[in-house]
Length: 268
Image (cartoon, rainbow, N blue to C red; front, top):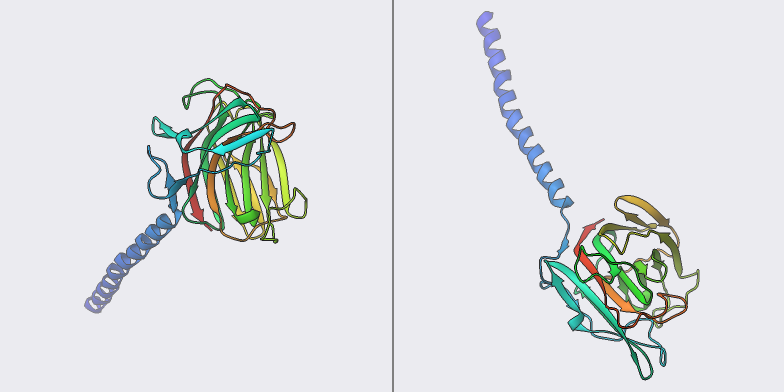
């Protein structure tokens, strides 16, 4: 009886010794799957744009004949200490202000998920950590966009108000850019006086029923109307304005800079 009992214990021990490695393997595979899922599919920058980004060279928004001639120019995109720098300069022309800004955009489109941008919004500081403050005539932003605002979600800093605007659009009329009306656009102003003076982490969470914005991990607004559905390009930009409203009057002969350390996208 004693011998039989010992044999039974040995069999149980053998089974346990087989189960433990299998369980450990399953746990290890689960760990790697979770870790792989947690990694962002998109990451920039390391002193260059790589193959994922394009530089814009076209007319910028807020352009108006006789008032503001805005463009994005490739020479206003560069790097300082490995950090992306986007520049805008404004000069007085014979027929309105000449505003030369900068923008880059992705080669592919992205859908639902979490987007993170580590940015310093526009100021007059020519270096990423130098002294600088918001100035009128400037809009800097990280946003998602697809044709005629079928999809648009903005993390947009206005220099004249020294505050952030969080806006999402869902335009079902694909043929033309929509008007600023509540049936296609939901927006909030988020006051924060430090956005042009230092880096912050801006997070946008896009889900089928909502769009949420966070600054440094703190939820600042959530929208459940006009939530877009079409995949969109990621765009980083700075542009000049000359308006009594959006962005403010031009500040001529004063160069402004926006900085981007990184962009990450986590699919839903």
